[in-house]
Image (cartoon, rainbow, N blue to C red):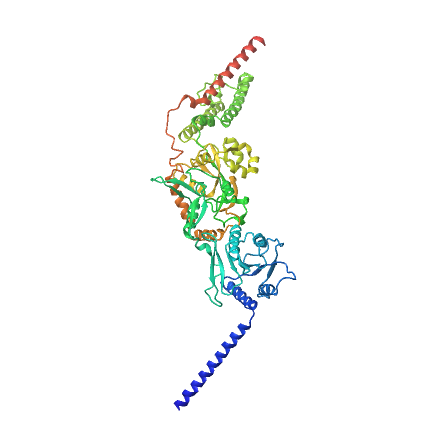
Length: 617
């Protein structure tokens, strides 16, 4: 029984071997019967499938030439592979050299660009084809590109020419095939543009087509430069005389170099204290002098397609000096104001009229001047002693009450004046605060602007030309602002204002403030300016989001404040120390001397008038 069972098993195994052997032979025969074009078509179809598995794409941008009757059938079959790939679900856009179109303006960047270079056997044709494709892929040059070239004897020349063109157009994600079934080329942009030969294994997960090259830039040298505009970047020398950089933007760019394995090189020797305006930095980037600046640019004056993602959102404001305490001279001017003289004048007139009417009713004495200035009433109002003439009316109780009322008015005025003198002398009041732009004219405080900022704010400067002072020296502007010079007001952003305001917390009294009416822009977006179609935009954006999510930006800003204090870039001494007590001087009584002089002049003129009336009238 066991012998029969073993025979049965052996028979089944033999049948399976014969079956699979027959299938293998049939497959081999079928493959041997396939034409080279059919094998190449299946090869490219398999590559497309694995490219999509690596990272999905939503459309195919297909570059070809216009068909002529002389073109080969093989080329048409090869084009059909790409044009009919997932024909029901994936759109295709067919382009030629004459089709100049900005793809990013209409669709997203998740596409695969296929460039056919089968019939381009000269360098001019290849240059024209790739240049046209680069114009179409403007602002998305780092999208995936698949180049199909003819397998000719000039393969090395084609590879070198394409390297030059791809570097010129800043394309980094490129795969190239020379119609071979076993290998293809991947573009390696770092540290220098070169091709890497890759073996193709069908239905294998080991095939790599578009790796993120920016994850390791292989110590590529990037040109950079700091603007030295606190708190963005600060350059200083340590105890050994070596130049170091601080500031949250400088920390961000240095982390970019460390994280992605690249080397930062200053485009010119770094000078401590050489401040460069952010618009000048942006111009240097556009001219190709700098690849990734240590500076930020923002607002409505930039094209965000050539910018990184937002690094900072802040406000642009005017910081103006808080009013100072009044001097003793100004205190006297405040005491001897119109309100003080109005009370004396009104009380004197009312009581003088009453006193003159009493004289006329009970004694028949009438002097017209007594209606205005009565020599018996005015001393009492001023708090001095006065003597009532003997009118024989002392028996009238109402007259006694009237004299008492004059003394009471004088007591009130003198007591109030004395209390105000003691209060204002002990703690002098402050000048009126600046709350809006019109107050700047009365306070005689101008807004100091650097010339580059003045150009950016041209319309605002023209509307407020009377309160604006422009300086071409950006270093002088920064020194005056960081020393909190109260001779001017300044344009400032939220970041640097927070540092100055934090320092003011330790002063006896704050020196600057920002009134609500001094807000110029309540939301301004700032990013890092990059070259057009820069390949560093994607890695920089990823790093910016990581730094913001992990709180690195806030930590760097705190470190920047510490470094600014060490470098004395914020005032260390209180600019408004407590005023010590001192002895009054002659100059402090300026308004009193003016009042006395006015009294003498009026008295002298009155005497002349009386003499004139006495002798000539």
